Image 1 (tube, rainbow, N blue to C red):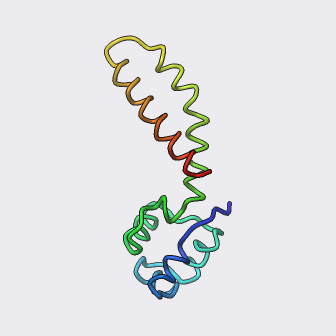
Image 2 (cartoon, rainbow, N blue to C red):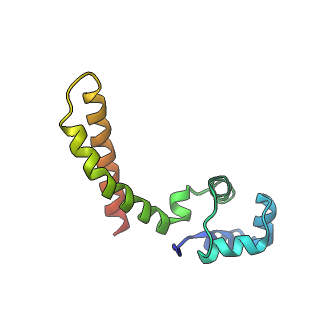
Length: 114
């Protein structure tokens, strides 16, 4: 699945080669190329390593993937939010605060992706 990313732009910003970035992460230049082309997605450790190298949060390096995640979580959140909204009891207020906070984050991220 191809998602736009900002890896090549950030690599170019520092005049680094794919081989140099790969060396820092213990990966081949071919693998870095696959990440840049969107042919392959990096695992969590690699994503965090790229964020460290380029000084950018993962959401700025992989905005296309973030958009997909926001859509998926938002779609699944609807049912959970209805359930939480109707809860009573000891944990209800904590869970309702969580739901309100997540809803606000999802709205903010969805609006910024447009």
